[in-house]
Length: 308
View 1 (tube, rainbow, N blue to C red):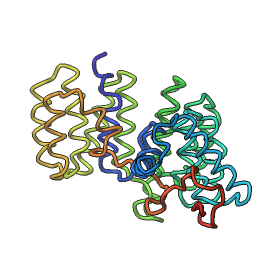
View 2: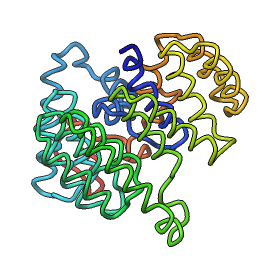
View 3: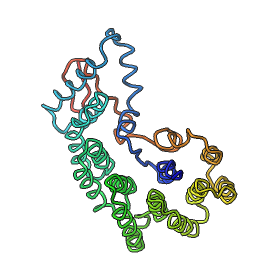
View 4: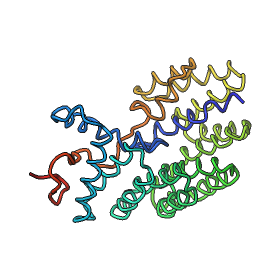
């Protein structure tokens, strides 16, 4: 059905206003923040024309040597994760991500990344465990909810995905009474509606969108999502009205994207998932800590910086 072409597009609408929402791909999330540093160090390196694969392997080995002496050196762990991803060694990413998750229990993004990595290498049970670990502590964590929902759909378990999200919505009033904002009801509704879209249950998806619109009349996301579904099911006049309404409601920085979606530009879904305009892809790796260069001598100080 044509509506399924927008499976990630509608999810990207959810991502827009949730904040630092992870893209589903591990690679852009982890490598984006440190690319400029890597390029600069290579540009000043006499061995600029060397084999990139060999340089990455040397960099990874340098981090490994640091970690033999300082197993809790987070800068080195983060660098090792990045190097192994660039080497396309996702299985080798699991152990250092597990260490980062252990060292940073209050940073759930690491565990979500671990879940994404396990999912990408086929360890679906392990991935589900990681997502559920986050949700046990933070039932409204949208990164984990989206990850687990996508995993359940991958396993062709849509009813389990629906149940997960419905349970989250049912627990929201009590959770938000204890901790205001613990569960973003509107975002969970959008994700639930997307599951219905995936299963071609358009009527139920539209019902959920209507509930979300009624509950938050100034939120452009459910209006835009409903417009996309209406257009893809052949109800263009109704969709056009909602596209105009969504553009009026959208914050200034998102109006251009709403217009692009309204005219059906094919580039919008990709930008929504992996670009910098719709989805912040900032890594939890601290941006003010440059990755140590393994082409330097292999000693490092306690902060993970290599020293002469």
